Length: 188
Image 1 (tube, one colour):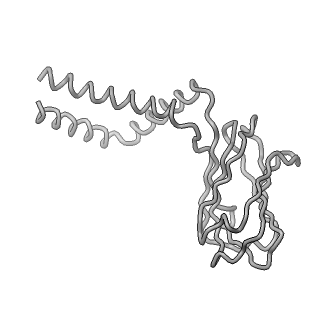
Image 2: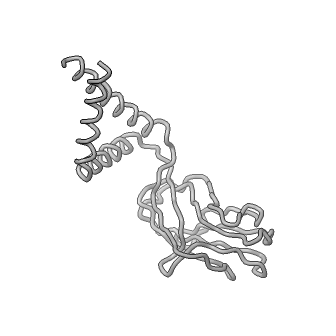
Image 3: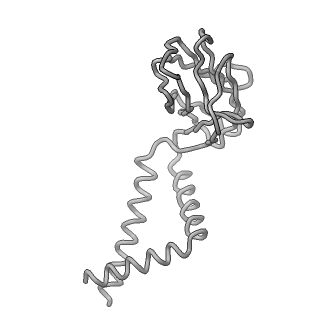
């Protein structure tokens, strides 16, 4: 019985330490904000939307776009503004947009982006064969990621996330611990 208890405790500790290590040292880009749209609409003029990041160092935007039949091969630009200043601009081609696809825009991290309103604009030099963007009445679908630099902050977020998961899913964790105990008992 004592060996079983040691086995179960060792497995739990190993799982927690591995999870913490991967989260803190291997994952560099973390989800900051996301929004899901309901349908695709045509981009027949410059398309603009705004969001406010909750972290510094925003460096990735993923936007669901659609190029029906892959007929639009023109050049596009994604521009990010803050307080009217163009802080990032990424050019891309209609060749980069699938039917449909999540288009990833990765750029140098935007420092001091926390709680700052960022305006995003997608423009084209050809609106004859428009691409489509996934959106609804509240705005487009997108995911924004930030580059984690402060390891202490990441550890705090990790502990907070696990605490919330445990409190919200006590039956799951009790069941998991029970199954782990039974497995350990059968192995020993």
